[in-house]
Amino acid sequence: MGRPGIRGGVLASWLCFGAVAGCLPAPDAPPGPIETVQALHADIARGDMEAAHRLYDFAARYEEMLGDIWRDGSADDRARALELAGELFDASTRETWNTFIVGRQLRLTQREVWPDTVWVWATAEPPQARAAAPSFVWRYRLRLEPGGWRIVQRESVIDGVSTDTGRFWAMAGGAIARDLGRAPTLGELIANLPSYQGRVRARTFKVPDLSKARPPGARPAPDLEDGP
Image 1: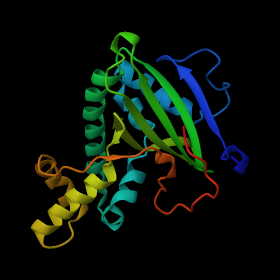
Image 2: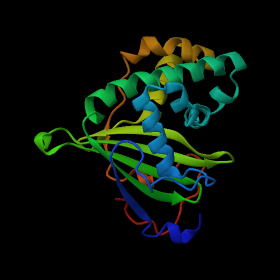
Image 3: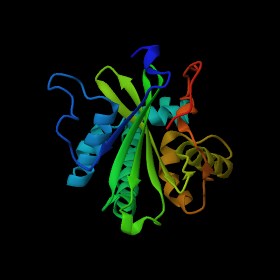
Image 4: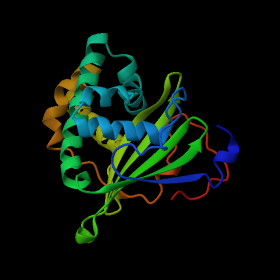
C-alpha cells in the first residue's frame, strides 16, 4: 500500500447489509479493510460472535492500552482478559446493533492513514421515515498483520460524540491503582474492573476526524487530508 493511496484516498461504497455481488474480493485475494468490516457485520447478523472475535486482535489493543501491565501478565491472566474483551464486545454489540443498526443501511468508507493502518467508518443511514433519528457511526481501526487485516479498535459515535475505550481503561486502571496504592497487575485489573464499570465514566468527546488519531508507536504520515 503506497503513498499515492493516502493523498485523497477516500473510497466510498454504499452497502446494504450483506454482501453485494461484485463488492467482494477475488477468491484468492485477501480481504481488504472494508471486506473485513463487512464480514464482521455478517457474523454479527448471524449471531456468530465466535467468528466475529477472530476478526479482532484484542491482544494488540490490550498491549496498546495497558503496556507493561499486559506484557507482564501471566498466561492465565491474559486468557481471562481476552475472555473479558469478548464478553464486553458482545454486550456492547448486541445493544448497539438492536438500537442503531437494525432497519438501516450501512455506508462503509475507508481512509488510509498509514501504510499498515486504516480507519473504516460504518455509517448507519436511517430510513426516510426516521430521518430525525440519532446519527450513528461505528469507527474501526484496522491493522495489516501477517495473516491479513484485523480490527484493533472500535468506537461508537452518536450524533457526533465519540466513545474513547482507551481513556476508559486508563481511568479504571487509575482508580484501581489508587485503591491498591500501586499499579495493579493484569489479574487484579481484570478481577476488579466489573466493580468500577458503574463508577467510572470515561468522557465522550467531539471528534470529527479519527483518521488523524495516531496509533501508539506509529509515525505520523505527512500531508494528510481530512477524512470523509
